[in-house]
Amino acid sequence: MTNLILAPIRINQLALANRMIVPAMVTRLSGEDGLVNQAIIDRYTRFSRGEVGLIVVEATAVHQSKSGPLLRLGSDEFIAGHRDLVQRIHDNGPSKAALQIIHFLKIARSGWRQTVDMLSKDEVKAIIQAYGDAAARAREAGYDAVELHMAHAYTLSSFLSAHNKRRDEYGGRSLETRLRVPSEVMLQVRARVGKDYPIGVRFDAEECIKDGYGLNDAKYIALRLAQLGADYVSLSAGGKFEDAKLEPGEAPYPYTGYSGDRTMPPASFQDAPNVYLAAGIKAFFAAQGQTHTKIVTTGKIRTPSDGDAILQAGQADMIGFARALLADPDMPKKARLNREHTIVRCVYGNVCKQLDENFKQVRCGSLWPREFLHAPEAPNDDIAPVWPADGASISAKLNEDGRVRVTWKAAIDPQGVYGYEIFCAVNGGEFQHLSSLLTTNYVDETALAGNAYQYRVRAYDFAGNRSLDSAIAEIVVPAPFAADADVLKVR
Ligand SMILES: Cc1cc2nc3c(=O)[nH]c(=O)nc-3n(C[C@H](O)[C@H](O)[C@H](O)COP(=O)(O)O)c2cc1C
Ligand code: SF4
Image (tube, helix red, strand yellow):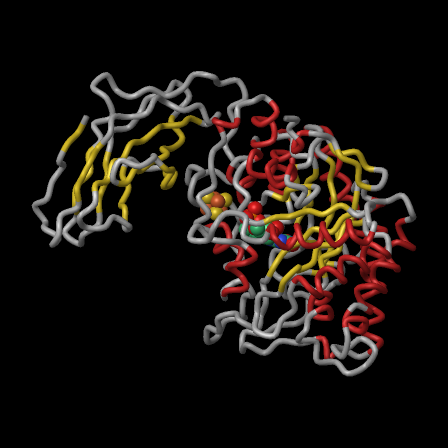
């Protein structure tokens, strides 16, 4: 079967080398000045060397106000930095670059936040204008496409929301009035960038909050955007203030509630929990004869193979991998070279999300070596790590608190060992990947009394080359828990 995910695709006039996308991911690498700097260039050129089809550069403010470390494009002085960034992305690999542009409302540490019903009509007009201006600047800077941020907790998403409390023609009385500002933005941007320039729109296909909208409305939002000439819709979910945790003295962060988990599904969630939204819109588009606008789905899609299965099933046209590509930007290249087994796998523990929340530089805080601001790179290394001559000496013991602690010896690699993958089989079943880590020990909090657990590990290096599997450590968790329970069998 053809590997669809590696097949080229066209968005408007733009040809992409494959159907993998880095969706926008705020990096917190720019300063308060909002300017492109070397760290930003290094982050995005790394993706380009990894050969992803489209890089959507992080949410960039269309307005002038400062908001911590966030890129800006609210005036012409910012264009030069973006031009340099795009040039460097193109110079480093086959990736095309889109810029996500965003408008957000005011928010205070007291917990107060501005909502769309507080905006005067002039302010609304200014927002529409600001989107048009920023899109024109993005084109001038050389971006291959522009993406309008209409998702999560931000201004345009709040107009679309079923919680929009305005009562005028921009208000929440009907889907038509909720869509009015986003539609005017779309028209304004199209007028400014021209017919042939690719425009994408990111929006929530489900708000994931009580009384929020879901797929039924999302189909028609997508249809309207398509009818207005959106070249792709990138579907997200949740990320709302309505269910955000409120901490005294802290501005609320819209990804702290359940809706935030739907935006960045954590390890405890099933894989690809939001794909049904793309599938629903794709089927609706087919019924409506809408073929121009491509559909991007994102959310805990782990590997190119998993993404390919979604494409083969006709559930989407392109796949967004955010954290998986942060963890290993070389994933598309590895897929092209048939080396998917060397991908360094994201564990979806969301340390990167916490860094974003705390306005700290976003990096893969679980897998990258501590001092690394960007993903490790070892293009010419095909020598796999090996275990010491006497093996990994893996053992599994019961801690006093009833959790199983697995330890092993460090592996050896000429260019350095990067990390370890741990696998577990329960009662003789299949081995499953439990986690990946930098250290030589792991504590399993899920082992249940009365069951047999087998563990084995594999080391990997910076290129993702894997060692052989270690021996197996086995433990039958006794009931009741006893501190003296020990390794039962090591093969
Ligand atoms: C650190 C971080 C920053 C993000 N910043 C943005 C952003 O600027 N704009 C946006 O639309 N989504 C943003 N997202 C959401 C991602 O684009 C993506 O939808 C989400 O992580 C789910 O995809 P994944 O499971 O492949 O990571 C961010 C996610 C993370 C982890
Ligand atoms: S910090 Fe965790 S969730 Fe984020 S990219 Fe790294 S492994 Fe994935």
